[in-house]
Structure formats: C-alpha cells, structure tokens
Length: 414
Image (cartoon, rainbow, N blue to C red):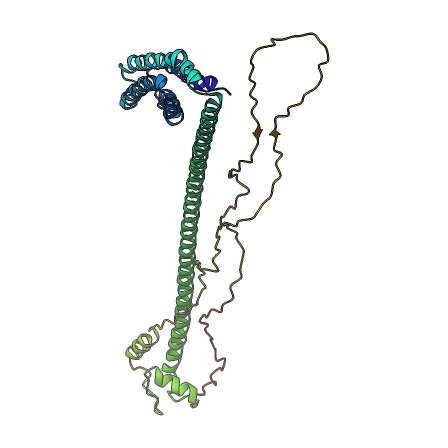
C-alpha cells in the first residue's frame, strides 16, 4: 500500500459516514449516536496518524514546514467542531447544519492533503523515508483496527452476557412464580383436607352422641320396666300378706317383708284392720328409680404433617479443559520469475510500477458462549395411601341376674 492510498483511505470512509449521517432523521437517535461515534473515531484516527508519523518528518524540511503548520491548524479546527457536535443533542435542530460545516471543513482538509501535502512529501522525502513512514502508519492502522475489533467483540460479548443474564433472570422469576403457585395450591389442598377431617370428626362425634343417647334411653326404659315389675310383685305380696299370718316360715320372704317396711309378728292381725298405710309405704319404696349409665369409647383419627427428610439441591461450576482443532489460512506472497509464454504485450510497459501485496495469517479468536444443557425441576408430589390404625376402646356392659326361686306355699293354721 502506498502513502497516497493510505492517506486517502481515511477520508473515503469518513465521507461514507457523513452521507449516512445526513440521511438519518431526527427520530433515529440511536442510529445517529452510533454513526457519529464511528465518524469521530475515524476522524481522530486520521489526524492522529498524520501527527504521529508524517508531520514530525515534514517539520525537518523547509519546503514542507509551512504545510505542516496549516495541516495542524485544520486538525485543530476539526477537533473543535467534533467536540461541539458531540455535546449537542442529536435531535437538535442545529445538528444537521453543524454536521454540514464539519463535512465541508474535512473535505477541504482532504483536498489540501491530496493537492499540496502529498506532492510535497514525494519531492522532499526519499523513497526509503516514504516507505518507512508508510510502514509505520500501516502498523498503527492495523493496531487501531485490532483494538476496535477487540472492543467490538467485547461489546458483543457484554451484550450477549446481558441477554443471557436477562433470560436467566426471567426463567428464575418464572420458576419462582410457578413454585409459589404450586406452594399455594398445596396449602389450599392441605386446608381443604383439614376442613374435611374436621367435618368428618364432627359427624362421627354427632353420630356417637346420638348412639349414646339412644343407648341411655334404652337403658332407662329397661330400668323403668324392671322397677315397675318389682313394684307390682311387691304389691301382690303385700296383698297376700294381709290375708295370712306375717310369719311365713321362710327366711327370704321374712327379709323381703322387712325391706317392705312390715314388721312380721306371730300374732294374727285383725282382718278388719286398715292396711292402707302399709300399702302406701310399700308403693313409695318400690317406685324409686336408679339410673345406671353405660358408656363406650370411640376412636377419632386425625392427621398432622411431620418432617420425614430434606432434599438439598446445590448447583456448582466445574471447569473442564477442552481442545478443539481449527484450520487457519496463511497467505504468503510468492514471487516467481519465468519466461513469457508469448511475445505479445498485453499491458503497459517501460514505466515505473509498484505492486504491493499484503501477507496475512489467520489467528484463532477464542470466545465463550453459554447454552442450556438441561434443566433440573424440583417439585413435590402428593400421594395418598391407606394406613390401618389399631387401637382398643372400652365400653360399659351390664350383667343382670334374676333369681327364679319361688316362695314356699304358706300354710295357715286353723
């Protein structure tokens, strides 16, 4: 690459960016910001390239010293206009006008370099000096390109990481939301289960109470029937005793009559005596009731949750060395001299000609990206199983013994 080609590459790219910026509208703020940042980088790189490698050499020659001063003044004016545009909002009404002024000044600067500076350089410097300056400038351009490439890669990697982090955050929020929803559903199911258990317990208690009441009523009715039978039997005995001697000759009946409140006597009572008081006392004694309550236990089974174990899920990072082969291309200049195939001349000859061919090597650029390998879903599953509860309950029983002994027949002495 010649010095002229190198010096004209920057203005060509800058003019392209000027055209793109002029075609943007006031609403395309992001596009204007991006294009202006690229334009600023290109103009600064062009002026820095001149001031670092070309102007120091041209100052040493009298015929180019004045041109260097004018070029430095132009560069200073360009930087001032760039600074004004940088702080100016890109949707401001004055932005297109100031951009047009900057473009006009840069075009004039590029024309001055092409018509005055570069011809003066070719006259004042030798080919070796020009070649040395060109090589230094090419090295600087390549380094600047590499820096911009690295910055672009870093920006892309940062944007990719931000997207992945945002995606991971959204997935985490979604998982948290699902977990909260599942937890709420589990809690609601547990509450419904508790309500069902309480309702069943109330129903069992109500049924048990009704059964106890029915059992108590049945026992009371049985007791009343027994007492009524005893009372009727006692009345019959008292009626029979009124017509017979009070001493029956049998110990059982004598004791029974004593419990009835009668005093057995060997003398025969007056048959005409009034026995209504004795009958009333016997009836009052046998009409008293005694209630024996019979109860029973019943089993109520409730449920409660117990902790049967905890599962811990821990995510950690493992670094694994990997190897990957990549095919790289190297372009090397091969100069070969050979005899012409034909004597016919097809191009320009007998003139100076310089051909520059760039040798290139591909180098591996390693980057990392993250993709999802698998998902670990953590949830709880509810299953129901039937368990038989073994327990013993107590209940009251009653044992009734009837004596079937009949009293001996009474004989009345005449």
